[in-house]
Image: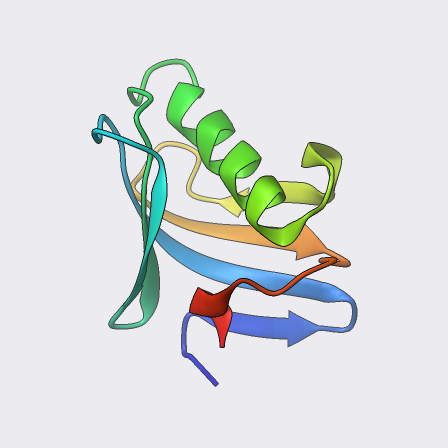
Length: 93
């Protein structure tokens, strides 16, 4: 099991290192104890956080409403929860 994710019942908690203003939105994979994710949105008025939530919702096959930011609203290091993911992306295995 990766140090960057943890199951809590039906909820998956992820530790993420976010890189805003990237060329494209993508999950890079594990980097130490965090999952590195790049998003094209700037870190202004929550745009990068929202892009992250939408990317994770798409990756896990769930509605955006089932992805929530637990900590890190203003920093690059974040904790995110995904409730009842419908699929498990290859980078999670």
